Image 1: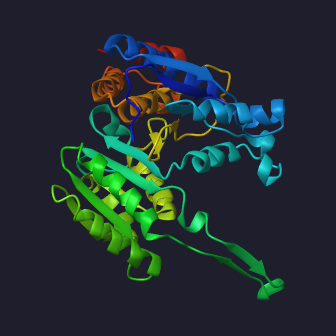
Image 2: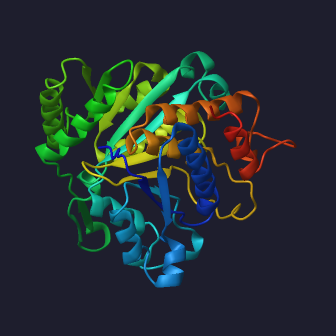
Length: 362
């Protein structure tokens, strides 16, 4: 799931809408500097997607953007969408760009890290003694399950019924659990928690059986199983017990947002979506924030941390990824804040916050 090579790592830059262009530009700036310092050859080429593509080209993601991504090793994507396009038909909604990329490149494993340490502790709504030291990686299956199963609606009035189906094959479960286990091998605790609802759902019973089978391939890891309702409770009761959590599409959607709540802000949450082959897709979790777009005050840290994930998983360069993450942490330790993080009169703008990170990159 990496694309390390002697040639330049080709990165498709797709800024998206709202603050997407602003924060993605700062992430590119940090990536360029990390590439220079760590002697990683990087090349960048920009494409269009989302609302701006609908306005300019009549489609959420033009073919030339898809082709750009196909010949790239990684995709750096900004958020897409905004009120302007909310009432359009489904095929002309900006988020279809993201769905197209997921389907086209088989991006079945979505990674969302939630880390609470040092200056980040104060942002968490949990007590310090509960939150401090949290370092959990949610691995969400991204291309199957309830969101992709057949749907139907029939009848009228109070007799109307609707149905969603939750299909998974053993192969779909196996590949995402294997991905989670491989990632867990790179982390100090080497622990995987597989989350399901096996006491109710047949799909979850299959999930648990396959996860247990995959666990036997990784005798150096600790694999545990947990019901999703218990996991939701444990994430706020004792989040430090978790290392890597792997689960299905719907449960992963919910639990990853809960993990962001443990952190206390989306402004620091990156994500990566990976398949068996390049390109991987890397995007900050936050939205387009059209109310502050163009004002130069957007928080670039989630986008910068997304760039660190890109270096970790597409360039296979742990040192550079860790250096970016450490620089962000040092900037926060030194009191650097954007407005959304509680900065007041001395709050830094988008560019100045990136400058603070670059000044601490070593």
